[in-house]
Amino acid sequence: MSTEGGPILTKEDLDKEIDEGLKTEDARDHRKLNPVERFWAKLQPWFESRGYMLRPRYRPGWVPSWEETDERASLDSEDWISVNTAKTMDAVRIRDNYPVMLKAIWTHVHPYEVEIAQYLSSQELRSDPTNHCVPVLDVLHCSTYQNLTFIVMPLLRWFENPRMATVGEAVDFFRQLFEGLQFMHKHRIAHRDCAAQNIRMDASAMYPKGFHAQRPWVLPEPGLPVAPWYHRTERPPKYYLIDFGISRRYNPGNGEPLEPVILGGDRTVPEFQGEGKYSPWNPFPTDIYYIGNVIKIDYLERYTNFKFMQELVDDMRQEDPSKRPTIDEVVNRMEGIIRSLSIFKLRSYLIERDMTPAEKCQDIAGNFFRQIFWVVRLLPAIPSYRKKKS
Image (spheres, rainbow, N blue to C red):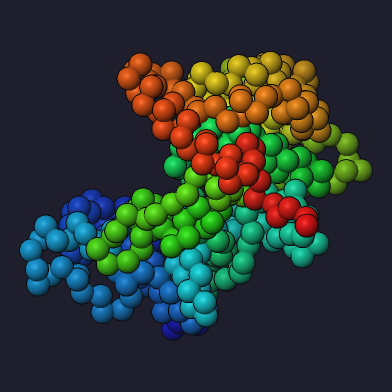
């Protein structure tokens, strides 16, 4: 029996309940909780007892705030916003109203995730400035469901939202991304899924009034007003790697590891194609491919400004994993690239390849005046979240 007084349920019980609900209910009716949301609402009293509060929509006795008004008012109501995943849920820490993200981890499916996440957040490692692994603030073991643990993390934001403004802002991202993976590899941990969907940023400085976890362009309050924000040059963020579900930690005395193929978010890994998917591979060079591919897809292919990254990215994406540079080599080469870039290049505005001439002119003009303002304020061309030593 669970401590809540009912039978102990399993992941299969939850999956069946959600699947059956989705077949028989209209999930578009926001006046009612959908099957996924009922999972979270059922656990809300338990989360509250552990010091965390979900949004009003998931609290006992919830009644839609727009019920007595025009139905159109629902679109501006905070409690109209629903979720459709049983994997993560936003909340606040009750003692200080700090926004957090709760992640459900089924330990029989991902037996190492909690252990690795806690290790990376240990006091000794957390104090390392090169650690870019998402901090774990708390671990909650759920007794309602068998093998279910929740980790509590800060509320982070998609690393490219809002879009970067200058080459210098992107260079800061590249440097932090490489530094973060170097930290993991130094401690003999392979991420194994460090694709774009597992990169976030702490945008608390950029968004001093906060933002809504499910609608990040608005504030988390009634009426959903637009969230004011600053550029990265003005309020630099720290970037993080998240999701250690298929990560592994290795004993350095056992030589180079070999792992069977597990597909992550990026399905283009060369060694995983064809007959290669049946062979074990060293996961460390695969990590190099993943982050190289992030830069290729999100920067080299999207913008015209990053030819200086082409050679390094090509090497990181070599078809033969043994020919890819190590993360230490990537970091060293990146520092050399940074030293070669002029201030003018670093302050230049990002030009998207599909921009019209009129859009380019408009954006470049806006960036020109913005840069003057930033130069007058002595803001560096490459922003850094680290406090400068006085």
